[in-house]
Image (cartoon, rainbow, N blue to C red; front, side):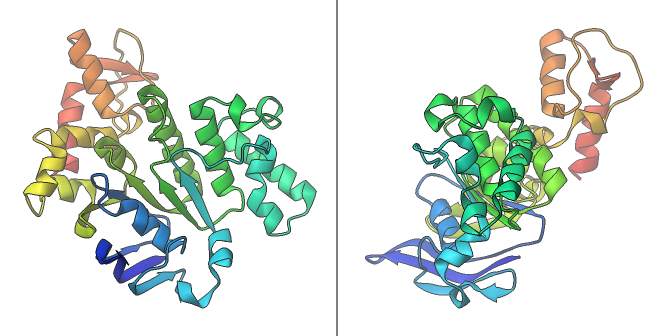
Length: 306
């Protein structure tokens, strides 16, 4: 779906991106992870030609991006940024229907799509459709931003630290909600972040960048267990294997065994289950109609992290 080959972007001799090469498969989430200034966001903008590359080639859906006008290319790619990028003078419904309107959708089709998208991101149409961005909380605005990016049903979505400006509690909720949406829609996503746990939770693969270069690409398990150098290893720290627990849902490791205490949600992670065990001094915690045990968590680590 997306292919970058030896892509470089220079600004007055400074290489913001330096010989970047990677591919993103259909339905995959590739997370670009790295410190500030490493070229993550520039790489994202090169894909949809908001920034023009100095050299190298980029293909989207099998065709070179130079074969189509930048505006046309961007209409077919969803784009979400950290501060939502919502138009302040437009209500939520008009923000969401921006690209469908540009594409010439009939009004009823566009309106129906707005309702569908608000439902998808967990916002009530009657309550939110006529609000202005200034009337939304940070989490609500980010949900609208995601809804707008998905409104025209693009195959590809680019996300530039979309949850970075949201408080930690809402950020985790948004991450989980987006993960659920992705399981339904199977979009091809390039997701930029500097948050290691966000990368672990969302990424099918992770691309580590440093000083404009790609350092390593692989699954979270591959990168944590087989870091290519000290820089990559330092990103995850000694507790890297434990951070991998954020990738695995308790629903997939439940046992039909009762347990006392406050029940975790089925979409909770094994990391959350382990934290609950530590806080309560137990080796088993309730989840939905069953429970998860410490033994099952250790078994998951042994199985998922060979």
